[in-house]
Amino acid sequence: MHIPDGLISAPINIATAVVSAGVGAAAVARARRTLGEKNVPILGVSAAFVFAAQMLNFPVAAGTSGHFLGALLVALLLGPLNGFLVMAVVLVIQSLLFADGGLTALGTNIFNMGIVGGLGGYGLFRLLTLVLPRRRGVFVASAAVSAWFSVVLAASVCAVELALSGTSPLKLALPAMAGVHVLIGIGEGIISAVVVSLMLGVRPDLVLAWKPQQVRA
Amino acid sequence: MKKYLFPFLLAAIGVCLLLAAFLAPFASSSPDGLERVAEDQGFLGRAEGRQVWKSAPVPDYEMPGVGGSGIATALAGVAGTLIVFGLALGLGRLLVRGRSRPGRPAAEDAGESIPR
Image (cartoon, rainbow over all chains, first blue to last red; front, side, top):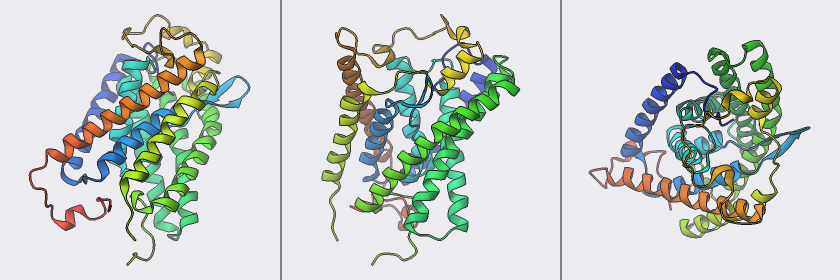
């Protein structure tokens, strides 16, 4: 879903860059106040995992592949704003060093994947935890559903941006982008569920969003 | 129950490097969702020749100057994984160090700190 240069109009790239910078500033401000010494290495490992896992394109349909996004996963591990910082670091490096995602579209890509995907997916996750029991299985299932949703939502917003840019009409772009990412999102859901499940098994204390019913003594 | 962070971190970064080195070369090379849609709807061409930043040292995740494309991909993956790890770590360090008092009020820290 990394948009190259030339597909998104300048006003949209500028608007999304401004919003992304604003959220980035808020994330930095919050991290300065609350980021714990021990969160720092997790920040690094999360970025490493997102980068590596994003390289692993899996086939979803004839001649089409998809890859892990990770925005929802890192939001669960580190909190939504710290997760946003991780996604922003990865997207900047992908664009500058690996020519994945255009430089002019960097703000749009950070907006779509970091904000829409990350914060949007996290929003759904929080809604689910409000109404569902706080159990491990439910937590993992909610993570899977929210991860799927984060990808579909980000892809849909991407379609809207393509339409607003005059690149592709919405009635074509939206069903196509949402449709293929409904499939790619299944991979996102599975990978997120597996990682969250492993983390809860090994180091539940490193999953920030995990708040079990009873506090451990 | 005391658990140490360091062995976990070492294992986790090890897994990331293994993914990049040994799985990335076998990743599907088919176009991704957006590329597929762009191709189908005929707007992929709009991006052609429009690339603004042309100095990316490792374009398309293939380390230049390495013969076999599998090895080039593995090297690109390992390099990228280490770079983002280092950058995110550095950013985190910077943010934590920028704070004036090491002893923060417990309430502010609640739910955020990760116990060792």
